[in-house]
Length: 227
Ligand code: C5P
Image 1 (cartoon, rainbow, N blue to C red):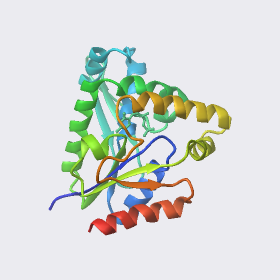
Image 2: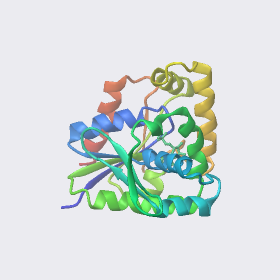
Image 3: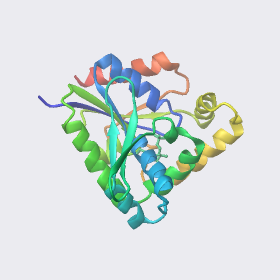
């Protein structure tokens, strides 16, 4: 039995992550947060002293790095890192959400060969999931990772709404600072992949005027329409 894929792209703060998670739960599907894998590499670069801007250096980190994620239930993110002699396990669920990692991750995701390797890993995780369906969310899922997915969605929201949502998750940072950080990251990321305009055949869901529940329902409706 094949796994049904629901591909969801969108910018930071669009609601993509939390909405994808809730929609996956209701559908009985797994959820693969691809941004977490990019974040884990930025974290691993810091841990090992690798140069984020150097592609070969990041590929070398990937050689000693093994990513661990759960697709169902409580989302824990872990990595195994080989220090030359043995693998050590780290739970980085919280560590990858810091403003420091958010500020560094675009420097990792700009490397084409890093993206190719991660995309292969994402496809393998889905193929081995054994689940009836998986929601994959990121920036280039509808266009590069799973362009043939039966359901493809681009989730957007106005910059102000996105900053307000993110500011709620980051107490201590001003709305202006969060907005500036989001815009700076989107500008860097958009140079690598286009996640601001829907590709042909991709359903656009603008959550600017939707609450959480309405956004989840919009995803479920899109999945139902494809069935
Ligand atoms: O989704 P999230 O904000 O956690 O993504 C973190 C970063 O990972 C993005 O800013 C982007 O640089 C990178 N990313 C990517 N392609 C994806 C998912 C994330 O380049 N499919």
